[in-house]
Image 1 (tube, rainbow, N blue to C red):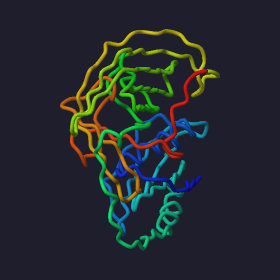
Image 2 (cartoon, one colour):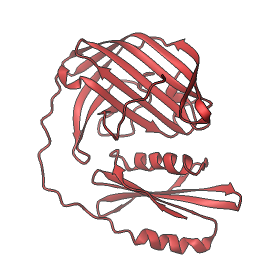
Image 3 (tube, rainbow, N blue to C red):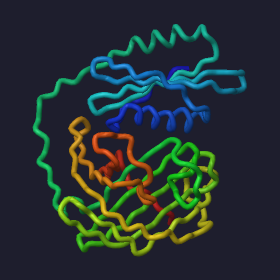
Length: 284
């Protein structure tokens, strides 16, 4: 079986694109829980191609799932192949070889002017991560060591208050974790200080065993974490999206591990809310 998935916006990191599609398509759609073996990345006409595969058991015995992810020019798409015999390999390789990767013709446009003023960060900014993260720690929603995703979002208001929400969903975890936090923020130059006044972590059941809010199981207080970040508004011209980049000396409980994107060291990248980066839907 060969499946070709339509393109979407790239994260700017080919490995992240591959890991996100593996979780969504191979784990989410086909229930393949084996960790993929990833080959070294290849570059073709400006496209970075990452291939990975894993063996798994099904009713027909041992099969192999392979995923090719193509990332370039602000876009990404994937091709999946599932087979249970070596005689299928030439057919799959022929199909992959038949794909013609285009290099879009673009005229050079200057990036929009950077606005790092306090008012430029107002509004809601979100980020999402997928895959395996840190060791299992119930009090840290980013630390549940199973496949799934985590989403986090800040909302900065003109009156100096903020709210923060994060959601963690894992395929093999029987709960959905939700963090709700509120407090104040202060901007001083290119630094922003987040001062929580209330922070809670909640565990919710999975309705119908799926990624749906069920009933509230537990609520715990979290220790307020006052942090001063260095912030930058950065424009990714490939995908034509501004990011609010937050940097700190060390990883925080609130934001989770640093991003694997090395454009900025020790950083998290929050993008404006859009159809590709929707707000977190809350219970009730």
